Image (cartoon, rainbow, N blue to C red):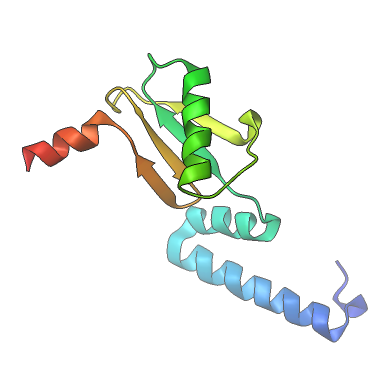
Length: 115
């Protein structure tokens, strides 16, 4: 990128992006880089952690329902959802959308009962 070829508006946008990147990386390090790339690509992050004994097709179907009902995300392909098996989640799943989460595990209920 040659800065001499940019007009004033492009230089302002570049400065704005560099300032945002510096702020994010100085405050939250590697997570800041991840957030910056999401902002620049306008791409949502769909992650589902689930108990390994649950069938993946069922997990995907339930996750799509939650994404539609809770986060208002309509047309999500199976390839967009990143699945992570986690044995610490007791018999259900956690559904992440960018920085938001829906905890649908029995572990959450168990912890509430303990209190």
